Length: 446
Image 1 (tube, rainbow, N blue to C red):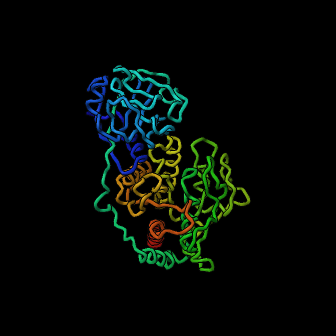
Image 2 (cartoon, helix red, strand yellow; image 1 turned 120 degrees about the horizontal axis):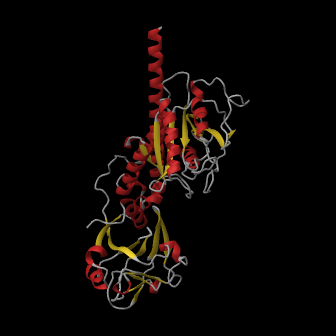
Image 3 (tube, rainbow, N blue to C red; image 1 turned 60 degrees about the vertical axis):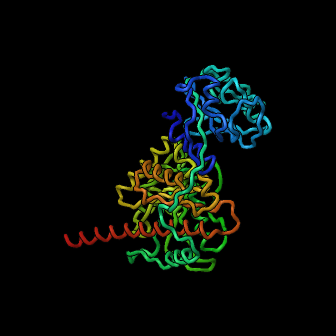
């Protein structure tokens, strides 16, 4: 049987439930739109996801950990929920009355409280009566008022074991953290005229650009700190171009890396970071604390415009910050903006890296233990997807977990964060090597 639920929708669903996969048990178009066919295929099997499809394009249903039966009784389930897909985004409606989460009705298909029934009375129709035992009251949002089913599927939710071996090797020991910190402190750009590599952070609003700086700063300060403005908002909290120089401790020396923060990218035209400002940033024309104007890029005649930037003013590595939870639902216009930026960066020969943030929110396996990040099938799939979407090799995608709610540092999070900085410095060296080669060739011609 071929599932009608798309691979992307299955991934989205599985990300809500942990380290699991979906196994198709019942498909009404094959087995029949009857209660008998449903119960024959699905009774005693659980947990399950029941999905209805209609001609209006809606995909909706319910999840329960209780195995189906024909007892006629209501069953307790504190984890049950109804859902609908809005594009690739999953909207969930949790159960309110746990004792009445699922009814084991012998004359129908999946029966959730008194709120939703798929294959009602052995017919390809939906019964819906919102607001009884589940937290939803807008039936039209769920199925668009189209109660006729074109398909009904029931999937069993099966646990998957984590990979036996991580697909990237990381040594999770305190010595690794110390070695990474010392490696970054002792780093020197391969070009003598540059003392600090400049790394530009670019990403959608809320992806974690400012949080990444705060997290790296925290690691070297020895405690969680928040110098750059960060948080949750629908529009960018960063409105200026900021060049943050890190220090090795409160009174320590500046580290050989500068993280440049930008206004967040937004989907709509005329809001968020102006793509035309990117060229000025890359070439070193924008001064620190330049106030972004989403509608108009910086003019070359403006007083603040740096007319003759030198190599140390330019960007040596570009790093895209992408939220792991939103890779699959990235809006087309936002993807187009990232593609336009990537083309500009490519033309200038600047190496590009991708940081996949919020990996703990995307995968319960990683939330349980960040050391599972390279054992998680789901995180690997998200990294592969963002690699494809942004057109960079998988080797250029690095997962991280920023500090957002913690009060104390976690050595394992630090290892991921420091590994990301080390990759940035390696990429910056690639840029300097390329510049040196260009100068050597020019000298030979002369």
